[in-house]
Amino acid sequence: PELQQSEFSEPIAAATLAKRFDAPLQTIAAGLNAALRGQRAGAPPSDFWRAALAASRQRFAEAYRLRSFSIRKAAEALALHLEVLSLRVESLKPDADPGEVSGALLFLWALRTLAWPVTPDLAEQVSQAFGAASTVGRPPLLADALVPPSGSFQGLSAHHAPAAPASPS
Image 1 (cartoon, helix red, strand yellow):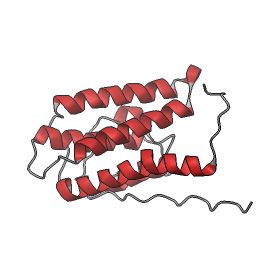
Image 2 (cartoon, helix red, strand yellow):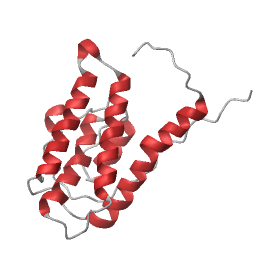
Image 3 (cartoon, one colour):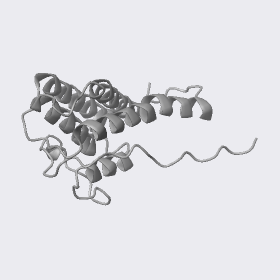
Image 4 (cartoon, helix red, strand yellow):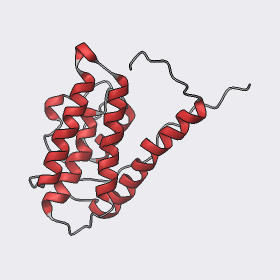
């Protein structure tokens, strides 16, 4: 599949990115910013989030395995991670169970490391959301992916670099 030829035009690529990356990221930013700004990932994550983190970490590990590295699997792992967080964040409230709050923040924090090889700009946004050290020129370590950030959640920006304009036909 990695070398498979496909019909993937620029408009189809843009629509896919909007659906699988931009829309979930906007939902995540809006939901977390409204419900969890100022909160910390201090409590143990709920069972749901613990299982979701383990599954996501496994998907990324499979994508990044040296013998079978796959950018497509990494992109799919990223899309699934965003989808899980966007679906769950819609029901988060500021007074939610501490395990839910902490789990959601840890799931977001894990993107700083897990998504860095695919989307370093998103990893940097996650760092900034927690007031953590920049990832620019200093890739985060996998061992730190599940270590809670020391800072509180300050808010996430849902913007990314705009796509290059289409070339004239």
